[in-house]
Image 1 (cartoon, rainbow, N blue to C red):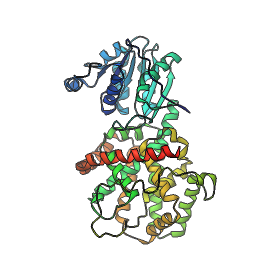
Image 2 (tube, one colour; image 1 turned 90 degrees about the vertical axis):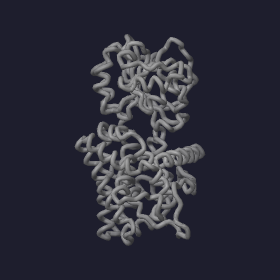
Image 3 (cartoon, rainbow, N blue to C red; image 1 turned 135 degrees about the horizontal axis):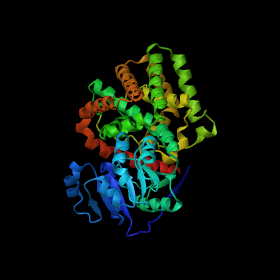
Image 4 (cartoon, rainbow, N blue to C red; image 1 turned 45 degrees about the horizontal axis):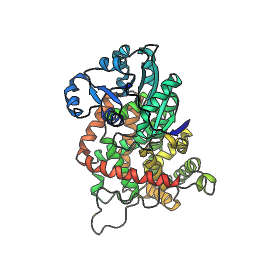
Length: 446
């Protein structure tokens, strides 16, 4: 793995970039690349032509075409921005129309089906250079990791892709497709599963957690805001990464197993076993106290998250209720069982992953807080109902992944998305501010 800061582009006025798929990320690429001066040809499904043409009518560098055949035959560098589950039929449809000697890539979050489709359906004279911006469409691209995969390409073609994408001002990370899928499984799949499970649990208990006194404080702010942020996005982004990425299945299954087994220990009052297991995971992931690994500066400054709350606790309310933080305990147990060292992939981690790792550190590096969470898990029933629903939800997502059930995933996601929809706008605003804060905190560390 290597990385570099992107360089200033050298503009070739005759070089045309094609975008097939104009979802949120496709539109972001269109706007950013066209603003840098690149000529863009773009399309989505034909029924979206009029809407897209109107949306980009004021942009002289973006031309909306009716289908991928027209984009493919006239573009020098073509990026497929479609969901991972649809990549194969879309490439099968438009791949044969690819311009002679063009460069083709995709920006899906799972590269295994993408690369298979390119190898199967693209002409042999086409170079393949894929990419993946490891962040959402509303996050500032500057300084964010951008994975570049030189799968089948000359040095000249790869340099052209780097030149085009350098206007994003992202950090370029060079991986193979298999390395990409393994790292995104390690840094995204289980993280998403945790937040998806939180949302299902709160939905099942009919809670808007920011409206009460139970979920207050920095760690809870992260849980609530990032859960809402995920449910405000398109369902297929998370389904594709989990279901189509062969590296993600074992992670999500282990997270469900860790959640279930830790919850059983709490229910059965097995305090010594719970403590032994959690502390063994802590030492394996974060290092034993006093070790060089333990001495490293944490990702988040103390108090950096307390300001990011969607609601206010009731007047006269005492400090936050003690919480066993089952989701955080299960995350570290999962990493420990699978031998995952989360710090190994920081160069291509998402802002969401940095936040999640940061709050996990916050719990596990504070002995008093960690011991309190274990005590609460054994002795306090305050969060028992929520933890039951969280455990059920984690197992439900794991079953969807194991059975490759896209439709079930979509339905599970959609019903909870509708429940929380009224608060998405506020959550995205607060979430963006939270991400800026954690990135600033991380920059200070570096």
